Length: 130
Image (cartoon, rainbow, N blue to C red; front, side, top):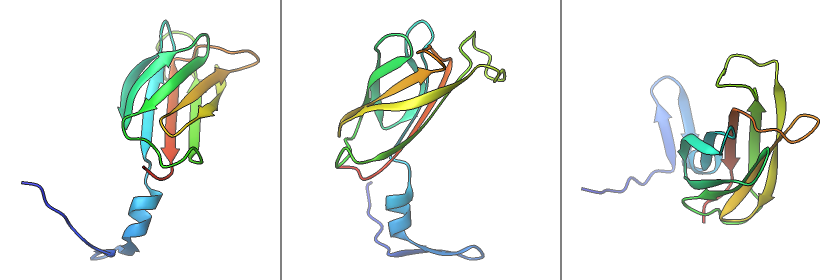
């Protein structure tokens, strides 16, 4: 059985209150943990339907399951360790850059001094869903 809860404020018995605008507007609308080694593949995600390996250090498009309302959303990205599946070795730090953005997808670029395939790539997207 499906239902609807309508509320303007959420109140916790000891932690205080917050308006539901903060929940709707302040929550991540998509996140992704993926690798670029061998070929780009998803480890875990929310609101991501597919990703495509677009060459060394490039994953594009990363497609949303539910589109964003505009391409003016914000993203935070992280890339690290380009050798093996060693998640605890962080001597190979890379920069993750947010590539092209549309309402239906975005890109992730991993690079050091050149583009590199990174074993660990994390993406978080904030904005409004369509």
